[in-house]
Length: 277
Image (cartoon, rainbow, N blue to C red; front, side, top):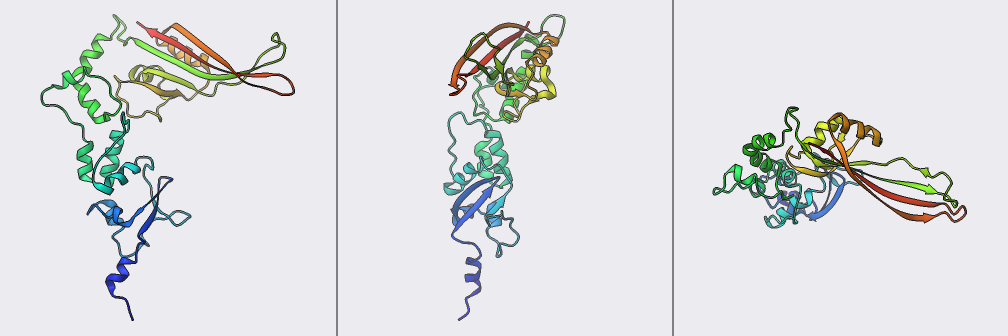
């Protein structure tokens, strides 16, 4: 007995579907992926055949998008509600993912909300929450950017004042006799903390922004690091930009001792604070 045509369509996709989204594996129901009509996932998994869909080496359906943010897309498709963790830093990027997956209601939920009672200039004086989107930050800063820039200008040189903190983690080996030469290992990474505009001015293309992209110029960050690992090179750039070191601190702990040589491996963290008037 032959199956009717609609039965063939129902068998095109299994009830439980495995997805590979940007390297992250998700397992969900077919009904969840097709819960929002006309969305991109609804279009993908409402087809009569799976031949046009990309798969990874293990046969899972592959979507080349942000695997971390897709968990919130999937949560929304389960019950059409948006629940984000406190101080969520990727709201703007999640809105872009919602636009890609053609989820207009989710896009509206993620859109920045500007209070009618407060002007843009008033909002610019509020706190700096991490869960605000980059587009909202731009709107808040338009009215206050000119005044903020003028208030930070140093007389005569046209450069903004402020602090930049340089931090690094390193390690060194100290022998049994404390008078022997210490063997220092190279610095793995130099971190940069401070206002985004100052960090970009001083370090330019040598600043790695992959951990905190799209940060507006007047906001502060502690997620940048440098593409080189020479402290002297960082100090030269700061000096050339008119910065002077005003404070520093360092901590060190003994990680472990070698069983045969009694050499001790010490780990240290050091910060240098620079300021330009």
